[in-house]
Image 1 (cartoon, rainbow over the protein chains, first blue to last red):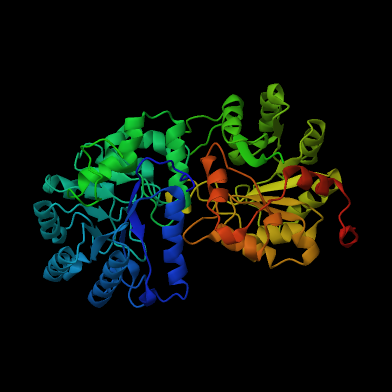
Image 2: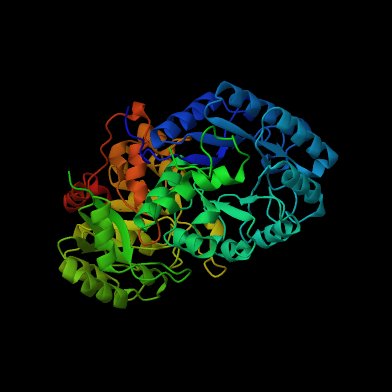
Amino acid sequence: MTTPLAGTEPLIDPHAHFHWPGSGRVDWERVNARRLEAGDVIGVRYHVASILGTWGYRSPTYFASPADVRAGNDAMFALADAHPDRVRVWVHVNPNEEAGALQEIERGMARGAVGIKIAAARRCDDPLLDPIASFAGAHGLPILHHLWQHRTRHWPGQDISDAVDYARLAARHPRTWFVGAHIGGGGDWQHSLPAVADQPNIVFDLSGSGIDCGMLERCLHWMGPSRLMFAADLTLDTALTKLRALEALGLTTQELAAIRWRNAARLFRPGTFGTLTAEEPSA
Amino acid sequence: MTRIDVHAWIGGYPWRHLPAHDPASLCTVLAREELSGAWVAHLPSVWWRDPAPGNRELVAALAPHGGVLRPVPCVRPDWPRWQDELAVARASGAPAVCAYPVQHGLGPDHPAWTELGHAAGAAGLVVRLTMRFEDLRQRHALDSAGDLSAAHVRALVRGSGAHVIVGAASRTLIEETHFGLTTSEQRRVWYDMSWLWGPPEDELAQVIAGVGADRLVTGSGWPLRLPEQLRVARALLPPAAGVVEFASADGIERSAREPTRDANRFR
């Protein structure tokens, strides 16, 4: 078997997405297959993934309708059932559903979801998110929240928010793990990092298409290797690029392992990734 | 085959700190990424009104690295005596000149734009353009120029015999340019592949299939962008892409020095 491009040390992608027929695109199966295939080439052992409704086909991606939220989650559960050895589920909710969002999380947990995905349908320090964050902390479910980066005015397609808001939410729920999505996902990443640096229950995933020189150095400066996670989101290539750049920066084996998989294993409940647990030596 | 990075700079960036941007660091990066050389421009000049002083700094800074780094002086074709910078380029052995029409306020139909193409073509110099320096969503409030448009590229190629490289090009710009040109015009344009995404969407593979690998060239965007992307993007091409050979920098340079096949149109 060919050695994975990222080496043989475990690797977890905690920010993945898949498609389904409801996405409204004819090549949805090809895209899903390519994520798994390229993940194998890179060496990704687990994809923790979500489907955001119909990806805009029937309702907006970041303002998904209740019906689309449920249908997308159902498709995601089916994908995880088909790949129990390598796919885990973030159950996606729209906090504007209020009680319905909590019901969907409970339904997701019953179907094996390991965390909660929230998009951008509400300012992220809005009180509507408090019941979700409380529930997450009580049940050991990390939250992966779409992160606006210095979004200080309203743009179409998303509600307004930024990392300062995220830190406020996290401060109200110190027992809950919050993942800031895609530091390389577009927007002012320089602003986001110091905005959450003092909030220890926030970690960042390194996903996104952005591969700016200096980004990783600032991530390490503000967050340290214990609060960063390898991740891909929509572009697996830039995830591997950033991993190689971290290696070039001279991180220790332990620091790289933390970013590759140990921090993810620490956030999720024990057993989420089979034998990969944060406390034990790597395989 | 030697691989040369045709889209690199030295010098600082006005909108954010860069960890390294000097010639020696670039040489280290090239060696690490198994690149044999680079075509290098002067990043601060992009936002200077008169690029001439930056060209002098560039040539002097690269001189100790002459076997590896080749200068790409900046030309602003609406500036008095701009042709002097073409002479600087020729005298310094440059393979190309670079231009930033959006930052200098030149629309695609500005007459100076095609004048540059004529002059560079006559001098046998490639014209290197840059679509963008950063993601549109993270730019400084004062960085309001916007991205280079496909219309700029089409106008330059249609209106002159210039040979053109577009750095940091999006799939949209590439396709809108390529399929907006005649076959002979298409042969005078190349795009660096650093901003074409890999799996799962496979934009790079789709551009290779639609436009052709011979229209793509290696270019990193260092010191703004991580050069590791060049090897990663190739390594993650789908198996169906087969063996892919991008255009070589040397081949592009030779093309620019040969008479343009449709040169009669521009006389």
